[in-house]
Image (cartoon, rainbow, N blue to C red):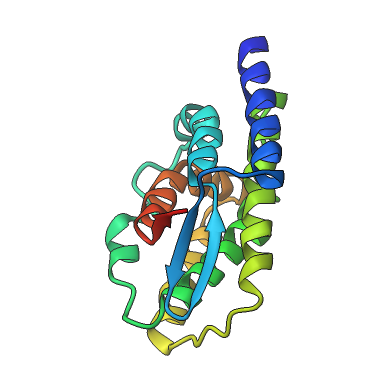
Length: 174
């Protein structure tokens, strides 16, 4: 546990250093909008909490997000989908995610803070949300609400790898 705590602390310091200095980031291209994201660091934080989040998921038969859902985002709706997905994670998931291990909490907080920063950068964007995109997110929210809140947050954190992989596909190195 001490090693995991140290690794997470180092990762947090690296992320803070990357945010303040030059670092390899990806520019996510979402319709007419773009945002710089340090996906490598997000993947590192996720790798620190992934095994605990997945092993604590008691609702194996329920899937909130899958790759096909994100791959089927309609043309011109990527910006909207990303904004709604980030809002879901910031407002519903990270605030309800609990771990008994402080290092896990720090990593989830670092992920939440990174998502808040991406959301802040995207506020300049004028994303148009179509009905289908809103229905897709509403479906995710409905499935989330069917579960006990902590179980739902645990599941959503466990599925974060799918989200990060999809975001990676939107980006180009800078």
